[in-house]
Length: 247
Image 1 (cartoon, one colour):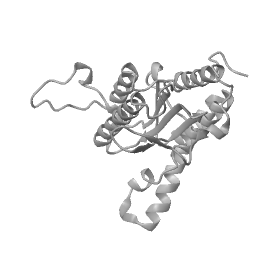
Image 2: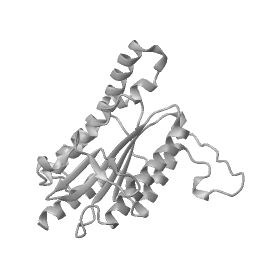
Image 3: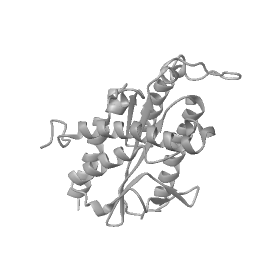
C-alpha cells in the first residue's frame, strides 16, 4: 500500500539499505584492493564501482511499482544516449519505452578527503551532461515528437569535518555570488542541486549525507527538505505514472 506521499510502503527501508550498501561495498573494495596494492590507499574503494547499486535497485523497484515494465529499465547495459557535443553519454539508469526516452538518472557519491577538486568535477559533470542531452533533445536526437524526459541526479555525500566546515573562495578579479560565501561543501552541493532544478537542467535531485561509521547501518541525514529522497522519488513516480496513463 502507498503512504500519504503516494510512494509504496517500505521505500524508507530500501533507502537505508542503499546507504548501507554504499559504505559496506566501499569497505570491502578498499580492503580487497589495498591487500593487492598497498600504495593505492583509500582511493581504491572509490574507484571500484558498484557502490551505488543499492540506489539503482531502489529506483528499479519504484519504477516497476509505478507500472513500468522491467524490460524497459536499463541499469547494467545499453545505457548510452546520443549527445550533441559528443557522440554518446553513458547514464547510470535509463527508462526507454516504445522508443521514447522516459527518464535518465545519475547516481553520484563523494567521500573525503579531496572535497574541493571533486566538487568542481561533479559540478562540471552535472551541468555538462544536462546541456549535452537537452541540446541533443532540441535537435531531435530522440525523435521530433518526443515528450520531455525526466532527468534526475542523486548525490550521497560523506558527512565529516571536511564536508561540513566553511571554506574560503578565491576572488583575484571579481567577487563571487554572495550565497557562496562562508559555505561548506555540503552547502555548496545544496546550492548546486537547487540551481540545477531552478534552471530546468534536471527535474529532480536528492542530497543525502552519512558518516562512514553510522552509514554502514543505513543511517543518513537530509540537509534540505526540497532535496529529499522522498521528493525525488515522488517526482519520478508521478512522471512515470503520468506517462503510462497517456499511452
